[in-house]
Amino acid sequence: MTSIDIRRIGGRVGAEIRGLDISRPLPATTVAEVNRALLEHKAVFFRDQDLDDDAQLRFAASFGELTTAHPTVAAVDGQPHILPVDGEEGVRANRWHTDVTFVRTPPKATSLRSLVVPAYGGNTLIANTAAAYRDLPDVLREFADGLRAVHTNAYDYAEPKTERAAEHRREFTSRVYRTEHPVVRVHPETGERNLFIGGFAQSIVGLSPSESRDLLRILQSYVTRPENIVRWTWAPGDLVLFDNRITQHYAPDDYADQPRLLHRVTVAGDVPVGISGERSLALEGDEAHYTPAA
Image (cartoon, rainbow, N blue to C red; front, top):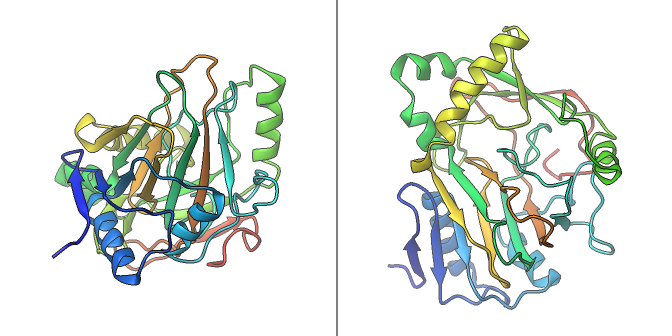
């Protein structure tokens, strides 16, 4: 019997956890309850938390070792494990993705904490990629089961519109990473199968670039079906924790020139495994400085 108040906010993904102060150290039994909720709902949300950077780090570390902030992008000053997610124009991550899949061991989980939120817009959308896999027609699901995709941080982005955007792009691609992952990943804790693709997946092994784009577009369309998505409207003091192994997320660029600032802390993950037991392969780039899982 759970001792925390868990309330669904989406039919297929997302639940709010109420009545829990995550600014304080949590007992192991409570961490286990939150983790069970995370596995079931893929993303859990906390309102009205009085968190600082140290408290966010402590909470995230309850679920495993932490990565550093990012393989290429600078951390918050004095906080090597915290990535500033700054909504300045030109560097907004308005693209469906799973965090850092261009390395061999992407994060297990991502925590996002709101510091500055716009008066309107600036929501975060999270998609359940296991539900997307289950939605596939049988013939397409069987085809996807045997595919592998190359993920990279360096590909043909849109032309940056500002010098700040160009500077961010140079930083983001200052080290090039390429990794081959199974298109269908088996979740290491639940055994669920899910579509492990997103914005960093750029090609399908054995297919031409145009064939890859077409097939990835079709598969991605199942991820982004409205029934597979929850939308979170930020308020100051919110924290979102999502399972990076079985979700994608997106931050719509719909808040004009308003400021938006989140702090991100990620929990180190393991090497993705496909349904036949095949593991991901690093093709380019050394991630040892980023994650202890490497």
